[in-house]
Amino acid sequence: DVVMTQSPVSLPVTLGQPASISCRSSQGLVYSDGNTFLNWFQQRPGQSPRRLIYKVSNRDSGVPDRFSGSGSGTEFTLTISRVEAEDVGIYYCMQGTHWPFNSGPGTRVDIE
Amino acid sequence: QVQLQESGPGLVKPSETLSLTCTVSGGSISSYYWSWIRQPPGKGLEWIGYIYYSGSTNYNPSLKSRVTISVDTSKNQFSLKLSSVTAADTAVYYCARGLQSVYWGQGTLVTVSS
Image 1 (cartoon, rainbow over the protein chains, first blue to last red):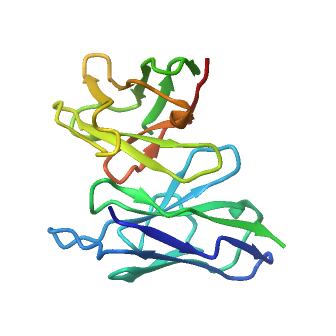
Image 2 (cartoon, rainbow over the protein chains, first blue to last red):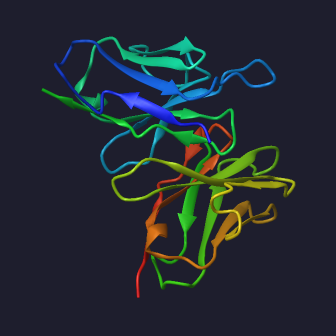
Protein backbone atom coordinates (compact mmCIF):
# COMPACT_ATOMS: atom_id res chain seq x y z
CA ASP A 1 0.00 0.00 0.00
CA VAL A 2 1.02 3.61 -0.50
CA VAL A 3 2.15 5.29 2.69
CA MET A 4 1.15 8.93 3.11
CA THR A 5 3.02 11.10 5.59
CA GLN A 6 2.33 14.68 6.65
CA SER A 7 4.25 17.35 8.46
CA PRO A 8 3.97 18.99 10.81
CA VAL A 9 1.69 17.01 13.09
CA SER A 10 0.48 20.22 14.73
CA LEU A 11 0.59 23.74 13.33
CA PRO A 12 -0.15 26.73 15.58
CA VAL A 13 -0.72 29.78 13.40
CA THR A 14 -1.34 33.48 13.88
CA LEU A 15 -4.47 34.95 12.35
CA GLY A 16 -3.69 36.59 9.04
CA GLN A 17 -0.39 34.77 8.62
CA PRO A 18 0.37 32.06 6.04
CA ALA A 19 0.52 28.35 6.80
CA SER A 20 1.84 25.38 4.86
CA ILE A 21 1.34 21.65 5.26
CA SER A 22 3.55 19.09 3.56
CA CYS A 23 2.47 15.69 2.31
CA ARG A 24 4.67 12.92 0.99
CA SER A 25 3.72 9.66 -0.69
CA SER A 26 5.83 6.50 -0.77
CA GLN A 27 5.07 6.04 -4.48
CA GLY A 28 4.39 8.37 -7.36
CA LEU A 29 0.72 9.29 -7.73
CA VAL A 30 0.39 9.69 -11.49
CA TYR A 31 -2.45 7.50 -12.76
CA SER A 32 -2.36 5.75 -16.11
CA ASP A 33 -4.54 8.51 -17.61
CA GLY A 34 -1.95 11.14 -16.66
CA ASN A 35 -3.90 12.58 -13.73
CA THR A 36 -2.42 12.87 -10.26
CA PHE A 37 -5.13 12.07 -7.74
CA LEU A 38 -3.85 13.90 -4.68
CA ASN A 39 -6.61 15.59 -2.71
CA TRP A 40 -6.74 17.72 0.42
CA PHE A 41 -9.52 17.57 2.99
CA GLN A 42 -10.41 19.83 5.90
CA GLN A 43 -12.16 18.40 8.94
CA ARG A 44 -13.49 21.02 11.34
CA PRO A 45 -14.21 19.93 14.92
CA GLY A 46 -17.26 17.68 15.03
CA GLN A 47 -17.78 17.73 11.27
CA SER A 48 -17.25 15.34 8.41
CA PRO A 49 -14.32 15.92 6.07
CA ARG A 50 -14.74 18.47 3.30
CA ARG A 51 -12.70 18.27 0.13
CA LEU A 52 -10.79 21.49 -0.55
CA ILE A 53 -8.39 20.57 -3.34
CA TYR A 54 -8.51 17.82 -5.96
CA LYS A 55 -5.86 16.63 -8.41
CA VAL A 56 -3.08 18.52 -6.60
CA SER A 57 -4.10 22.09 -7.30
CA ASN A 58 -7.79 22.43 -8.23
CA ARG A 59 -10.02 24.18 -5.69
CA ASP A 60 -13.46 22.71 -5.12
CA SER A 61 -16.52 24.89 -5.55
CA GLY A 62 -16.98 27.35 -2.70
CA VAL A 63 -13.45 26.95 -1.33
CA PRO A 64 -11.86 30.33 -0.57
CA ASP A 65 -8.97 31.29 -2.83
CA ARG A 66 -6.65 31.59 0.18
CA PHE A 67 -6.31 27.81 -0.09
CA SER A 68 -3.94 26.49 -2.74
CA GLY A 69 -2.31 23.19 -3.54
CA SER A 70 0.93 22.40 -5.32
CA GLY A 71 3.43 19.66 -5.90
CA SER A 72 4.26 16.72 -8.10
CA GLY A 73 5.67 13.24 -7.97
CA THR A 74 5.71 12.35 -4.29
CA GLU A 75 5.84 15.78 -2.64
CA PHE A 76 2.79 17.99 -2.20
CA THR A 77 1.89 21.11 -0.26
CA LEU A 78 -1.29 22.79 0.96
CA THR A 79 -0.91 26.50 1.58
CA ILE A 80 -3.25 28.87 3.36
CA SER A 81 -2.23 32.38 2.35
CA ARG A 82 -3.83 34.16 5.34
CA VAL A 83 -5.24 32.00 8.11
CA GLU A 84 -8.71 32.83 9.40
CA ALA A 85 -10.39 31.57 12.57
CA GLU A 86 -12.69 29.26 10.58
CA ASP A 87 -9.65 27.37 9.24
CA VAL A 88 -9.11 25.61 12.57
CA GLY A 89 -9.29 21.86 12.16
CA ILE A 90 -7.42 18.82 10.91
CA TYR A 91 -6.15 18.68 7.34
CA TYR A 92 -5.60 15.42 5.50
CA CYS A 93 -3.92 14.69 2.21
CA MET A 94 -5.40 11.71 0.42
CA GLN A 95 -4.17 9.69 -2.53
CA GLY A 96 -6.82 8.42 -4.92
CA THR A 97 -4.51 6.83 -7.47
CA HIS A 98 -3.54 3.44 -6.03
CA TRP A 99 -6.16 1.20 -4.42
CA PRO A 100 -6.69 1.08 -1.52
CA PHE A 101 -6.93 4.84 -1.31
CA ASN A 102 -5.69 6.30 1.93
CA SER A 103 -4.92 9.50 3.73
CA GLY A 104 -2.07 10.89 5.74
CA PRO A 105 -2.36 10.97 9.54
CA GLY A 106 -3.53 14.58 9.51
CA THR A 107 -2.17 17.98 10.53
CA ARG A 108 -3.95 19.86 13.29
CA VAL A 109 -4.18 23.60 12.65
CA ASP A 110 -5.07 25.88 15.52
CA ILE A 111 -4.74 29.53 16.35
CA GLU A 112 -1.87 30.71 18.54
CA GLN B 1 -26.84 20.04 -3.97
CA VAL B 2 -26.49 16.31 -3.41
CA GLN B 3 -26.80 15.15 0.19
CA LEU B 4 -25.88 11.82 1.76
CA GLN B 5 -27.20 10.40 5.02
CA GLU B 6 -25.94 7.31 6.80
CA SER B 7 -28.30 5.22 8.91
CA GLY B 8 -28.03 2.06 10.96
CA PRO B 9 -27.43 0.75 14.48
CA GLY B 10 -24.96 2.66 16.61
CA LEU B 11 -24.07 -0.38 18.69
CA VAL B 12 -23.08 -3.81 17.38
CA LYS B 13 -21.98 -6.82 19.39
CA PRO B 14 -18.62 -8.49 18.73
CA SER B 15 -18.74 -11.23 16.06
CA GLU B 16 -21.98 -9.83 14.61
CA THR B 17 -22.53 -7.98 11.34
CA LEU B 18 -22.48 -4.20 11.04
CA SER B 19 -25.08 -2.94 8.53
CA LEU B 20 -25.35 0.64 7.32
CA THR B 21 -27.31 2.34 4.56
CA CYS B 22 -26.55 5.59 2.79
CA THR B 23 -29.48 7.48 1.30
CA VAL B 24 -28.70 9.91 -1.49
CA SER B 25 -30.93 12.94 -2.05
CA GLY B 26 -30.77 15.92 -4.38
CA GLY B 27 -29.47 13.81 -7.24
CA SER B 28 -29.52 10.37 -8.81
CA ILE B 29 -27.32 7.54 -7.65
CA SER B 30 -26.82 6.59 -11.27
CA SER B 31 -23.65 7.37 -13.19
CA TYR B 32 -21.40 7.69 -10.13
CA TYR B 33 -19.15 5.71 -7.84
CA TRP B 34 -20.13 5.57 -4.17
CA SER B 35 -17.71 4.98 -1.32
CA TRP B 36 -17.61 3.90 2.31
CA ILE B 37 -14.88 5.38 4.51
CA ARG B 38 -14.33 5.05 8.23
CA GLN B 39 -12.47 6.96 10.89
CA PRO B 40 -11.58 5.31 14.21
CA PRO B 41 -11.75 7.73 17.16
CA GLY B 42 -8.85 10.17 17.02
CA LYS B 43 -7.37 8.57 13.92
CA GLY B 44 -7.15 9.10 10.17
CA LEU B 45 -9.36 7.96 7.32
CA GLU B 46 -9.62 4.41 5.97
CA TRP B 47 -11.27 3.61 2.66
CA ILE B 48 -13.42 0.50 3.02
CA GLY B 49 -14.60 0.09 -0.55
CA TYR B 50 -16.69 1.49 -3.35
CA ILE B 51 -19.45 0.53 -5.73
CA TYR B 52 -20.45 1.76 -9.16
CA TYR B 53 -24.17 2.37 -9.67
CA SER B 54 -24.21 -0.66 -11.99
CA GLY B 55 -23.10 -2.86 -9.08
CA SER B 56 -19.39 -3.44 -9.65
CA THR B 57 -17.36 -3.20 -6.46
CA ASN B 58 -13.84 -2.89 -5.12
CA TYR B 59 -12.88 -3.56 -1.50
CA ASN B 60 -9.90 -2.74 0.66
CA PRO B 61 -7.84 -5.96 0.75
CA SER B 62 -7.47 -5.62 4.53
CA LEU B 63 -11.27 -5.95 4.89
CA LYS B 64 -12.21 -7.81 1.75
CA SER B 65 -13.14 -11.09 3.41
CA ARG B 66 -15.68 -9.34 5.65
CA VAL B 67 -17.14 -6.57 3.46
CA THR B 68 -20.10 -6.42 1.13
CA ILE B 69 -21.28 -3.21 -0.55
CA SER B 70 -24.50 -3.19 -2.53
CA VAL B 71 -26.66 -0.62 -4.33
CA ASP B 72 -30.41 -0.17 -4.73
CA THR B 73 -30.97 2.35 -7.52
CA SER B 74 -34.76 2.26 -7.08
CA LYS B 75 -34.35 3.65 -3.56
CA ASN B 76 -31.31 5.84 -4.33
CA GLN B 77 -29.41 3.99 -1.62
CA PHE B 78 -26.26 1.97 -1.19
CA SER B 79 -25.31 -0.22 1.76
CA LEU B 80 -22.40 -1.60 3.72
CA LYS B 81 -22.18 -4.91 5.55
CA LEU B 82 -19.14 -5.76 7.66
CA SER B 83 -19.18 -9.18 9.26
CA SER B 84 -17.43 -10.64 12.31
CA VAL B 85 -16.81 -7.23 13.85
CA THR B 86 -14.44 -6.61 16.73
CA ALA B 87 -13.64 -3.58 18.86
CA ALA B 88 -11.15 -2.53 16.16
CA ASP B 89 -14.12 -1.81 13.88
CA THR B 90 -15.40 0.91 16.20
CA ALA B 91 -15.35 4.08 14.11
CA VAL B 92 -17.34 6.85 12.52
CA TYR B 93 -18.54 5.48 9.20
CA TYR B 94 -19.01 7.85 6.28
CA CYS B 95 -20.54 7.42 2.88
CA ALA B 96 -19.29 9.60 0.05
CA ARG B 97 -19.82 10.21 -3.64
CA GLY B 98 -17.12 9.44 -6.13
CA LEU B 99 -13.74 7.79 -6.00
CA GLN B 100 -12.25 11.12 -4.94
CA SER B 101 -14.96 11.64 -2.28
CA VAL B 102 -16.31 15.03 -3.29
CA TYR B 103 -19.47 14.85 -1.14
CA TRP B 104 -19.71 13.23 2.28
CA GLY B 105 -22.46 12.26 4.67
CA GLN B 106 -22.38 13.54 8.24
CA GLY B 107 -21.10 10.18 9.48
CA THR B 108 -22.44 7.73 12.02
CA LEU B 109 -20.58 6.38 15.02
CA VAL B 110 -20.67 2.61 15.29
CA THR B 111 -19.44 1.11 18.54
CA VAL B 112 -18.61 -2.57 18.79
CA SER B 113 -19.23 -3.73 22.33
CA SER B 114 -21.07 -6.40 24.21
